[in-house]
Length: 425
Length: 132
Image (cartoon, rainbow over all chains, first blue to last red; front, side, top):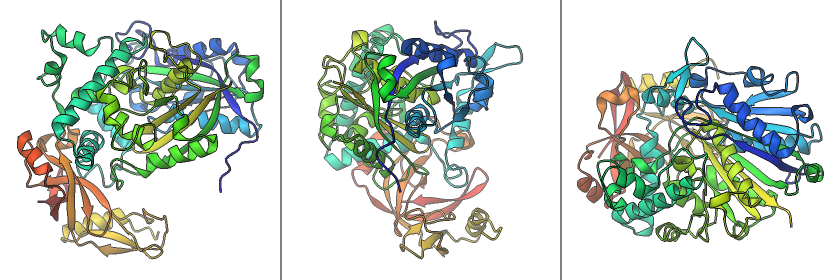
């Protein structure tokens, strides 16, 4: 049993997001500890909403990589830092969809009538880990990072059988798309190249993004004037043939936050409340669902969230999908109904998915360009959607300010969360 | 559950050359590997059955940064197999090219192809690989 209408609606009235990068290097987050990283995003969200910690009734903190944060019990580790000591709080986690799931959790908490003002925070510090003399941190070994990340994958059977996310989540959907729609792998490579040109161009327009160079600039920096030649060079090896390294995520550190209030009180805090119109989730164990181009774990939450929100795919002005492997910009835009099945690749070839295109997708640069800070990424995607819907996205503002946005995140391995956001009038 | 581990049973059976899955008493679907409910309908009315070991290779590739436990086996092929009984499974694939991308692409255009299960010890554990 489930019901589509909550007893009262809820709205996002403030958003915050740190720079996405490396806490050992990146200006803005360099030198912070994990608590301070979370606080930076949370206080930006509070400032954006005009609320103070005393106004928050309950808080939900998401974080995935305990191995690098050296932290669980985020509610107690952070409540005093956030000014929320003795308030109701919890740590929650659906891996990389965590802070998308948080929007639905907040909507239900408010919808039940139990609480009014909810602060949702996501934080992950994964490129380094603490040592004995705080707040110093040392770099995290990449192999060890993936070993602990794989704790989110089936350890009894899948991992002993050779578990590898790059072929499973990168190569196979790419091969499946080529096979089903009669494209050559050379054509797929051209699609992925053009997609990446857009991804990096968008990232450069987002000051908080991990990536600071567009592809032509990156290519020129190693003496290759032609970005297509660079794409095919030793600088872009296969992560898992035919998926290249540049089509994969950039793991990074970061935090995000948003403040959710009852819809009927939201105008007290902002002129432009962004309503949470619908949400849905699904869990699935592994990557071996039947159709690599239309997994039930993605399709079902899209359908459920649209139904709850009362929207159709044609209503979507802005789409954010979980592109930790960039092929999923294409696959999921088709699953979402945002691009036509088997035709969506043309929008990427023609570079129409940037903020100046007619089909904007992941205008912050996605999980490669903005970067992927696991538990904070859903909130970063919601931050981008809200900024776009409020006309506050700066140089990457979509010309037609979105009225309806759909945000999709996939958590290892797998949990899909889809949230539909709406702007009034 | 009687305290008997189905995971332990699965790996012990591999040592005797048998590949186990489950068949659902409610929807008739097979699940692989065996767990404690039907992976299609969720029913707990399942029985452990021996799988044929026949399947079709859907896709395969080779990861450039394999998990640490498989570093000594790299480069290895990793593929998506559709078992004759219905379930899909990701595992190591034997008997295919993993270095020459032109050969891999030529083979890709012939997929899906029939494969046969081959139990092999990898990283200290008997697992179900498939061979072209």
